Image (cartoon, rainbow, N blue to C red; front, side, top):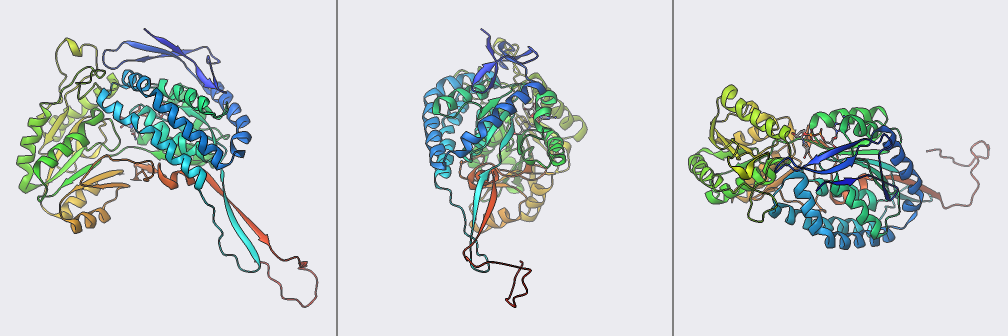
Length: 498
Ligand code: TXE
């Protein structure tokens, strides 16, 4: 059964001004699950109007008051999790066992940033002379969030919660593939006490609604998660308007497995890093750099284990891997599988084909793929594929592993697998990688900064830094003396002007 959804502006649903709609499909079978109002530039303007109107009331609340609302939102979100999980699975096809644990963590963002709003302290920097000098962190104003489809609610939460906590109001342009849960977040925030107009959602396409929001001179910051090409375009537009920009973009994460690490740990780490979310994550382990002495055994066990992963209906608890989000994303993966085999000359050791059988009809399923005989400069080892494809690359020395890991245009995430503490930190310090795990992969916490070096992006999500990046500093300099200051009086008194 399809459901109809409006835009969410000023605390209520409404149709698009143009009257247009678009559909959302279920990637497990291609069924249409929803019809959604299709916003464009006029609707973005209406949403910006609402956000501007709401700014004074929201930004005037104390951090403690906003913190209380955040804590209420965490509770309401917790109660609505079962419904959100089911919708999220229908939108993007991720397996229930993944979505359940991912969404169960979202209240932590509200608790953490609620606490930050309540406890954040300003500074009293030194100032020469008889002065009291202090800073205030004040909100930026109206901000724009452009979000993707791969973790619709998690990525949205990472952006919305710190910007709300800091006192901003906002317009969200969610992915056209997954707009429903971002709309529902509006209901949750309203129930928690967020005033109407603070959080507005305009579903629509990148080239229309997304473009209108990211080229607007009415926003003070754009925060985007998406592809690197989109990020460059959005950052250029923001630069032209002198609008702050944060961007979480593509990646080509490596796992670096040294010879002293238990082989089964390397194998299970790779399966998790490379195949979770059907590989559709920015920190996907797309390259396994493995010491030559354990390479063959790792590959053998990896292929055995990959063959046992259960593909199927993502709503089913037993399913381990769902479909890809869309026909287009699966075609991209299939194109790279062909490039790997034909152009690059790597060996497809496992997968990369569509599963057969009635259960998979109409869905965008594909077996996870393992390439061996990969060299670091091959296209499959350089370009973001954004699917469950891992390239296994052997190395002989620590220096070589570091050079290969750093040898792409990206710099989002890397994991290091070794029992040697000194080596682990030594290697970590040489990596051009915004996030580096040691003996783990894809771990996240609302308090821990998340973002990339190089072409993987600008700015950081999570942590105090994310809150602060949603504020601007106002410096207040107080002269504590009552004496008159008269620069132009030739009274023989010492004067300073700086
Ligand atoms: O992303 P887009 P797509 C990467 C991944 C994937 C590729 C393409 O490699 O294969 O990007 O995916 C909006 N102005 N990632 O096409 O287009 C768009 O509507 C303003 C990595 O889905 O970048 C959506 O809301 N907005 C990534 C959002 O940008 C524009 C997650 C992201 O979509 C716009 C997703 C424009 N000109 C994809 N064009 C990650 N870092 O996790 C598009 N949008």
